[in-house]
Length: 112
Image (cartoon, rainbow, N blue to C red):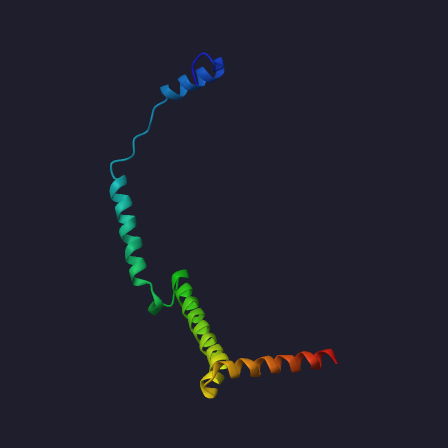
């Protein structure tokens, strides 16, 4: 924005803002920040599952583990249900025919 397109009020406000004193941080600011970080780091290291305060990461890890175990159990159950019969009969076409006949009989029962 150029000085010609600004209103006189904005120019005056900008001049006052540039002229105001800028406070410098105190000399011990760096040390206070470092001490606060060190204190928080020590607390984070000492608090854990043993101290009784679990954070969200621990609960997320537990939930993810439960989710994986449930998925694996469902996968193994579905494989046993669908692929177990073909291993017994030895011939996949015979199993498919048997499955089709079962589906047809189920449909006939539902229609009647």
